[in-house]
Length: 72
Image (cartoon, rainbow, N blue to C red; front, side, top):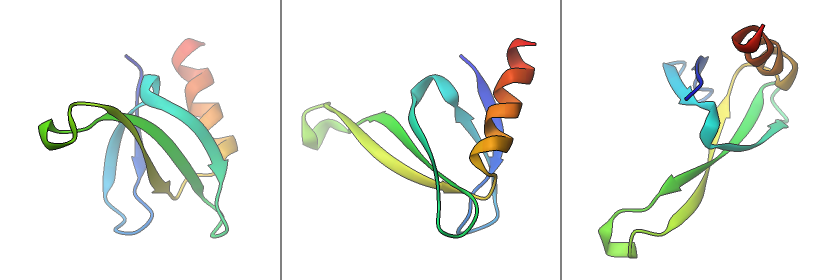
């Protein structure tokens, strides 16, 4: 697993994101990024895999630089 500590755009809270679960890193209108993550739904939904969007303050370029540092 590859974890990055990023800033949640709505609250400013620092969050740890498992980048192995990220499907898409897209720029947002606010200058940060939107991450689409694959998540396991809870039992009422039958335990299916779903997608969630997480707004992040870091730009896609900043995120890709962090990922490159993980493997550098």
